[in-house]
Image (tube, rainbow, N blue to C red; front, side):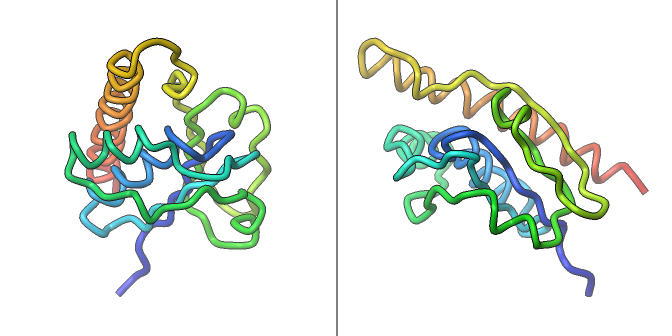
Length: 145
C-alpha cells in the first residue's frame, strides 16, 4: 500500500485558519491525506473559537492540536504545502523535492474585534470558506491521474 499524501497547511500563528484547515482536511479526506499544520511564528495555543467552531459546526475535535513551528517539517517528505494567509505565503520556506505550493488567502478571524457573536461569525465564515476550498481541491485530486 502506498503512503497517504502528506499535506502541510501553513499560516503565521498556526492558531486558527491552519488549525481548522488541518482538522477539516483530515476529516474530508477520510484518511487518504495525512494532514499537518504549522506556523512561521506559532502562537502559544489554538484559538478557543477555532476549537468551538470545528466542534459545533463540523463535529470535529481539534482540541488536542497544538501550534507548531514550520522548521521541523522541512526535512520531511511533504507532497503539498497550502498557505492560508498572505504573510505565510511570502515567508514560506522552500521545501526540498517535488512539493506543490498552493496559496489560498483567508482573512484572519482572530483579528476581528467586536462582540463574541461577531467574532464567532467570523470564525464560522472562514471555516466554511476553507471547507469549500478543500472540497473543491480534493475533488480535483480525485479526477487527476
